[in-house]
Image 1 (spheres, rainbow, N blue to C red):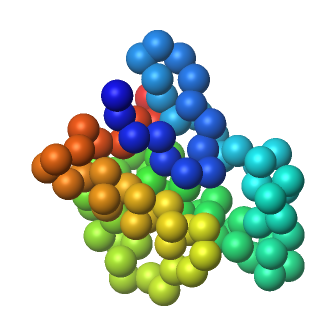
Image 2: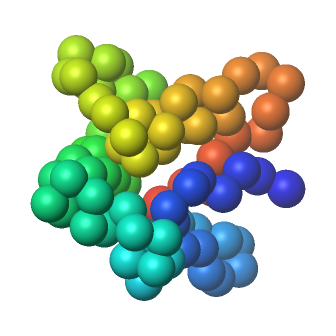
Length: 95
């Protein structure tokens, strides 16, 4: 009943975001876009959001100070939209 962030893999009960879907990213061609820079930026953003231990709002604020493009920007926009009061929010990361 919560939002699954794009480019991620979710498992468990309760569901938790576990990792980036690297195989899906390769199949879609996103992993090779811009010489791998798009994937590197997405990994950096994913790490900040899910592995640094910051509250989601604080991580998103930090990312607003950076010029993001492509999949990384899409992930951030999705998470921001998931925080709207009419939504239940994104599935959290693993602990």
